[in-house]
Image (cartoon, rainbow, N blue to C red; front, side):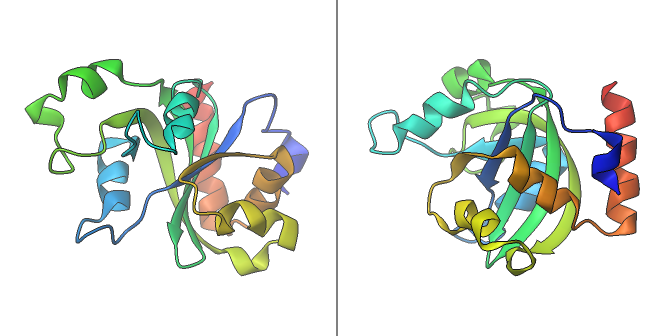
Length: 164
């Protein structure tokens, strides 16, 4: 069992909604391809607290990619903190989302497929809220990791060895 190896220590864990069907764009596939997680918040919106959150995410933190339709599509570790340069300068070479989604962190992803219905009700709750970026409890991440299949577990171990 993965938890016996004590892979989760004091890092924070986050749910990040990365839909595979946002206005005709597959945000999730682009995030995997470029090893990022990207959000599209306005500093003056009622959801600007998420912009503050993304700036606090640290290297080594865990990110759970939620694709909607009750599906967790990936688990990753943060490899680069908030990209102020991309957010401020919006370089054309990094415009993967047609001028949007400039709030980014670097993430090494492991694609997974987990239906949230296999989780306990309390662990499902963070995935039922419409908030894009939300800190989740360590127990939620542990339950997700305990639902990985053998292939996903091997990929996770490889990822962890690369981060050491």
